[in-house]
Amino acid sequence: MIPAWFPKMSDNLRAREWNASEYHRLSLPQFQWGQRVLSQLHLCGDELVLDAGCGSGKLAGLLAERLIRGRVVGVDLSRNMVAHARENLEPSFGQHVRFLAADMSALPFYGCFDGIFSTASFHWVRDHSTLFRSLYDALKPAGWLHAQCGGGTNLIRLRQRVRALSETSEFSNWLEKFEEPWFFADANTTADRLRHAGFVEVETGLERAPTTVATAAEFEDYLRTFILHRHLERFPDEALRHAFVRKLAEQSSSDDPPWTFDYWRLNLRAKKPRLPK
Image (tube, rainbow, N blue to C red; front, side):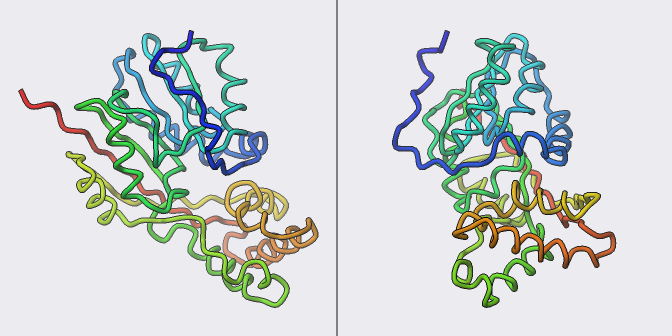
């Protein structure tokens, strides 16, 4: 049974779509990062927890296993992701999981959640001040936020190559003026924004997480699915998409080690203040 407080999906949502099945198949690094973050949660088992940017639902399933008397609500801007997560998890977990296509920066919840968990999602939101206010409003008093996303100099080598390639004559018609779709904040700025949103007990920090794949083909698949799908959707045909990722894979082949993504993860923890006695 759907709880009375659970909102209906908005027909006006400006969804940003992903290939959910490919994400689910290739998302081992994101899943492993998320497992480490999830292992740090201290849960009683009866909480109502929001998985913000739930993707295909892999981590939401692990979270639901730990909340045997509680519930998980997963939200994602992609309807494809929400449909995939719902199809995979609702038959097993029933009323203990719910999924909704929603914008994390404008959540349709107020004072609902004991905690908010998120991995590999916040860097897709360019306005972190608005994002943190939305998350703060969705929490109950004394509720917690525990998250990880890309930050600092995340993927800087690849991003520099993407920018240089975007300005060549072969690709400039579509990408020369295209702004990066990500926002990789530093730890200090993130802490300031969290406090400004009202959070207390704020902790932030960066850590390296380089990820190497075995082949050029795997590198290209990863680019298409996780990193450059917003770039590639601007091209009018598959030949240009293929050429773009192939050139990036060729450049990476000379790195040591080759086909390595120079990831940096931004960890953040914070709490909403308790109500005054």
